[in-house]
Image (cartoon, rainbow, N blue to C red; front, top):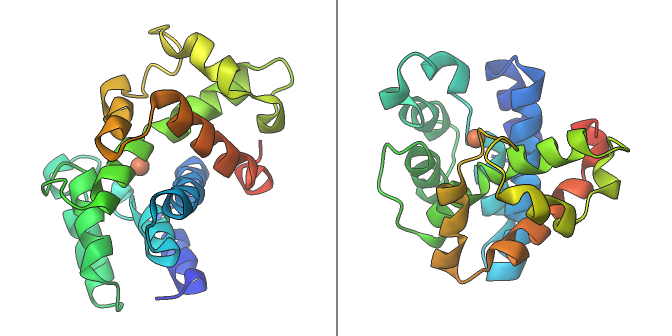
Length: 181
Ligand SMILES: [Fe+2]
């Protein structure tokens, strides 16, 4: 499945624009992290782009989240590495491969970065710095939905929290137009 096909599929299954943006942000982060950690960039980006494909269909049945997406992807020539990561990020398969671990840790970071942009006086992602995010990271009310324990699992692939947040921030800044930030 090439990028255009994947994006068309996302748009056909996901109607919420913010959720689409979350998937675009995850794609960008996975791309940057593949380059950093020696992953296959095209495969990692694809996993990020499609990871919440079934979110709207499974929001009332979380036990199906990821599994339904894997089914949607199975007939489309998407490799096992991607479907496995999609299932495991939702907690419905074990987190095993490096890609599984990275997707799991990245998922909540995008919310953290978006929250930082929205609370920045400029409201612009371009103006946000890693320092700005890290100063607020410990405040429970800042990006309350962004699970800190999950983000901290970046240590399982050898990245410090600051390095991880910084890499994701730069990746999201590179697609700020698409993200509307
Ligand atoms: Fe997600």
